[in-house]
Image (cartoon, helix red, strand yellow):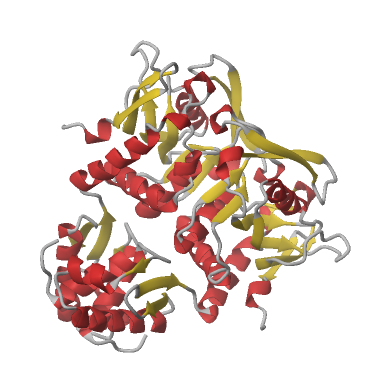
Length: 275
Length: 275
């Protein structure tokens, strides 16, 4: 790379950091990349750090010492996130989203990359310190959420299938009971998809009783892997004895569906509750 | 937003543009956001433009006049992209990827967000000028590719399902013949997912004869929508009379699979051919 002026270097470093979240970059690597003294690089990083933290883009955490460097940790600010989530809740409350059986049509929202990135940044904030190795979701609607989160956490994604496909090689299948419909269903994961002892973050779009997520937890047990966290985009309010799962982060909460008046009420989830 | 010094403003503007691809931002909006004169903003944009273009991040295209502004168009440089694709091809050639029937295991690669973003940027480059309204893929493995591309093109994604789910509302279903296995299969798309006359970019992970993609083309016809482009990650070489589809962009090309020696040959696709 040719030697850049400070102003150009700031632009390049900003994009370099933004596209490499949760990656330790040594000062030496930066100094070589930009053919500049480490002292100049440190000054640049201080400027970037201040902007990232003031504007709610994330943190630049610095590791001192010989093995040291800098790591960009994407985070959202709770106040900004709450504003975004309020607007998502208003969209979810549109009466035309109501489907037979009290389900909500939300496929269109899950197809908007900019919104998925906002949501992914919220999950990445919630689970930044959980030492996760891999993110898991079940096809189909959870995939955009899992990938958006994975992008900010710099982690791979594995996808649990509803059936077993030839293109996956040998797989482990389990049966589980869907919490709300009480029907027995099957899910499977390619044997080579997950290493033993992996710490896994489960992400899904919707949770009622939690049967599907409990199925994923059982599947992880077969792989001798560990649940490091569970994140759901929208949870639906159910009686607490019906709930199979209690430790999870939700971004939104469907509290009321009135099929007669087509009134839907959606509120920000437990991610936004005061600790 | 508080008033920033030039160096901090460059950092903020860089991240602002990077997270808003294919979006026209007026100089006035920037001037207000940063409480700065348009002349200063123009100077900043010139610096950002030079770095983005020199480093192969993309183009900053400027629209003059009262309705004018600046638009960040993410693009990859062909030489950098070819280097990335060569390394992806080497990964695809690992003998342990070979599955019964001559299929390749590539789910792990499709689960790597950083690689998906490289690939998405290639598709976004190939289809930057096609006036696309929406990106379409079929579940499951095409979804990460479609979303990565959509992120760079700032477009929504619609997902064709293999079966019809209650959470999708009313849907249009078609039958199609899988080109390689000659089996009749079904695919469906929610009626509300696509407007008439939409210009659609079809993205998929793998194409043999092209039956699945031809199925999506037929489905688009039912919605009176228009195919604006077809992009596949890996195409498999087939006899040209077997190929159902001829106008597409491929990023990689599986030219040889020897089941006995487990030798796999993958080369860069037609995206990299000289025009």
